[in-house]
Image 1 (cartoon, rainbow, N blue to C red):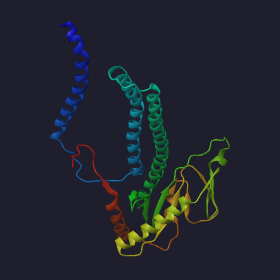
Image 2 (image 1 turned 90 degrees about the vertical axis):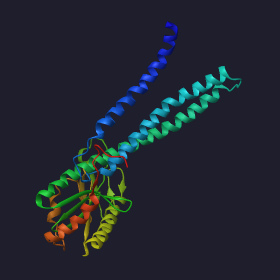
Image 3 (image 1 turned 60 degrees about the vertical axis):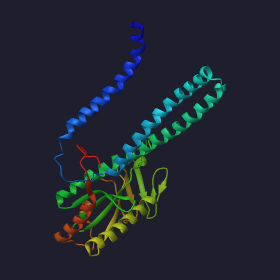
Length: 296
């Protein structure tokens, strides 16, 4: 009887390891069954809302790749032992070693790629949050500020509606070189065509900001029924900006109060500001409460 009990002990532990999480999950589900979230409305999108979703997806992928990388060697080792001692099939152990290397290499490559992408997304999230928090200060001056506006297969990081116009702000997070050269490592020059960084130059962020402002202008004009001009703005948080040309607006993400002092042809009334903001709010107030969320 004692030997039989010892033989069943591993199975009992295995069954217990499955039973406890299942019971806890059922108990939590029962407790939540008679509760509901007090929020009955959707919330505004935060700065970097889309990036945060991509980071969560990458975290899931990284966990999967880590699991597969650890399981694959054990799987092929078990397969080798099974075929060697329990079947008449004779397969060289080097074949299993080769398969193990191939699969581990594949998942390792995918893992390293996902980690690198997550790091880039985290940098972008930090920068969008920093710029968004500074822009929120404009609401003290009567402006309306929206974040992560979802457009046609792309998003506009920030939108500011002020008396002197509408501004579409694109934020780009770029890591600085660390060569110990002070401001030289943190300076970007805009010559009218390119952004010249210490080791590279870019043009795409400028064109992206212009495209997004043009799209938003057309969308708002159609939604409001009046022609609405939108000015493109590019934010490069943490960089010293040396502008040789004034257009488009490029700044380092801090003290955005200058936006409200830019002279433009547009001078919106409070009624027009409300009309524009209403249209933007319909697109940006779409974050559902997560607690006590009902399954669809």
